[in-house]
Structures are given as structure tokens and as C-alpha cells.
Length: 117
Image (cartoon, rainbow, N blue to C red; front, side, top):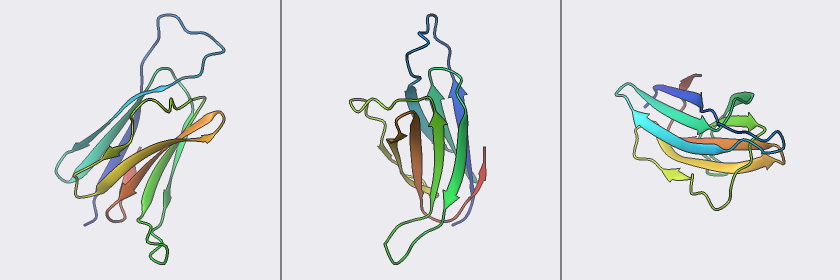
């Protein structure tokens, strides 16, 4: 099943922010909206991000994936952000520390999608 995946980086503000403190992911909220699936990634402060698609690799058993890299964000390993999703376009959402200063949110898809960011 093909469809549309909309991913949004929603920015919240902090009353007092330390320049040395890294931003954090506050939450991830997927929502099935019929013909599309919306995923909101909420972060504590404004930060640059980029996204991309990775095609399926049937030889390795890997599904197609959509990812969002968020600069200046640290993933707290104690925070439970990974989700198994019951959705026609989305299997699961995983988070990790891509590099020291960049978090990555990966969405494992059930089939290729046309993203709107």
C-alpha cells in the first residue's frame, strides 16, 4: 500500500535555556489520518534538521525507511521513544544518536511512501 507520510518537527520553547545544554526530543506522536500518516517529532528548542528515504533491501530483509536527522539533539537513553506502530504505512519508529551532536529518528515503512515535510 502506498500513501503519504507527513513528518513534522514541532518546536517547543524553554523558559530558561543553557547555551551548553543540548536540545532533546520531548516526544514522537504518529497519527493515522486515513490516506496519510502524520508523525510529529517534538523537540525542546529550534534546531536544524534534514530528512531522507532509504529504499528497501530485500536481500538483507530491510524495509524501506524514512529518517529525520536533528542537529544539536542528544537522545537520553533512559527515555523510551521507540514505538511499534499499528499503521498501514508505518511499522515502527526508532531513535538513536547518529553522531555526538545529531539525533536520528528512523521510521520503518510497510511500503514506499511520498513524504511531505
